[in-house]
Length: 175
Image (tube, rainbow, N blue to C red; front, side, top):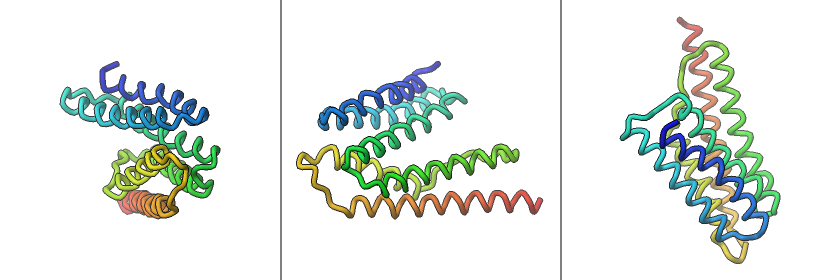
């Protein structure tokens, strides 16, 4: 277990306290915890590169911690009525389909590694900014365009991953 992997485990652990803070209506604390998770995400990637400490477990832990962080944020804020259910379902379905697609490719012996595109990174950024906006807003009144932006980016990114998966399948069939 190396330092970057410990940051990923930290993110998983902090998610529990984030959920508790939202459930108790302590949005300032939830925002601080969410930001701490984001900083630890940046640190684990940075440290893994400069320390040359990329590991197989880290390749699993890091994206898992990211998905747990975002999915739990959307779920708990949706349950509390701050994010519309259709937005949360869009985020969760995209992530499920991406994971299922990579699992299928893996089971079919495709050795491709999931690599995030610029659109995927913009989607994650949009999802994160929306969570931060909701936690930061003290009146709990939101502009709907945040939700529409999340859904548009999420759907486009999901379609891009599906297209990549289909291309991967077709490429191997032609060999």
